[in-house]
Image (cartoon, rainbow, N blue to C red; front, side):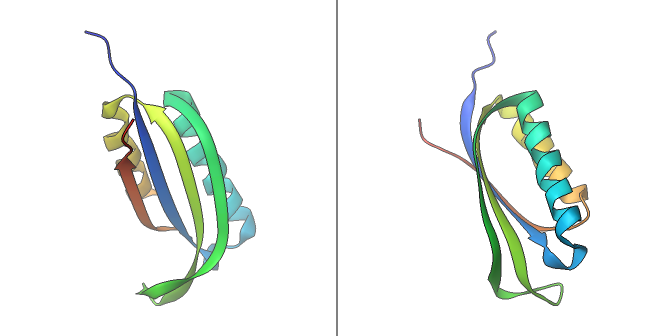
Length: 98
């Protein structure tokens, strides 16, 4: 059976309290992880933005949007890694219609 690749879009909100160097490190880690397991088509760094409501007493976050294609099994692994990465305060991972 051939594993069909699907298109995904993922928004990650990173804590601004950890500093710019750590933010860049997390973004690079996610880029490498996606590239190793699929095809990364675009990374759009929105930068610091105010949150709609405080999350863990934080009022702003660093937003990054990733567009990529991968096997459906990878999306669960990516969500798991988001959950255990220090500094990541919110994520959204959706399947895009092809």
